[in-house]
Image 1 (cartoon, protein in one colour):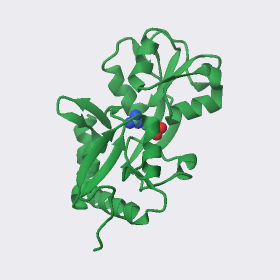
Image 2 (cartoon, protein in one colour):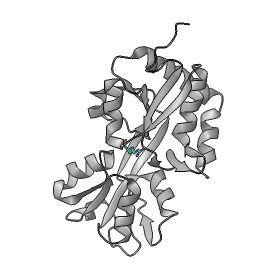
Image 3 (cartoon, protein in one colour):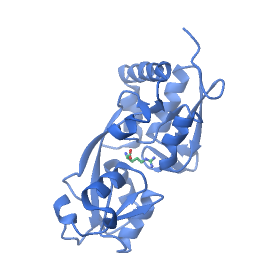
Length: 227
Ligand code: ARG
């Protein structure tokens, strides 16, 4: 088996934004989460050591494009636009964008959001789709998702649109908020790789398939998402 070429010998450098529980976040042990465990397991299978770079979400794709990182793993949704700049591995999780509201909000679905101010994390699909659907004046962008949720709690915005599992985690920490049952979009997460690096995509897909077959993927998810 030919050696897999990486940015730094013996390492698999992963760019992420560790403000996104349960996929990547800081705890007493450092940066943990589903993506961290999955990528640690992938690196292990490839005989590499995982190295994590915690940066702004909208800096992840540029780092992968410029070759500073081997992979971008950040609960990152596969989109046609992003595919113009990076290649993606097979998807490893299904996700949604959900609408977070104050408990007493009368909004019942996406249609009611017209004319409202919506908080998002900068550069995420939430940001992109809200801007497309409701216009620039309706978006309030925050560096971290949690900051958008805090702004909602302080009534500085009318709603937050963010990934469903992350929304659930944030709401454990902030009172008086609810998540609408009707989701805003359905999405899928994958690992981003430099365009044209088929050796890396194939290596990751092979490792992912093994982890899936071994039941390891489900095990990791179950560790962070309690049914
Ligand atoms: N799934 C969304 C996207 O791809 C949000 C991901 C945010 N991830 C993060 N680690 N902050 O745009």
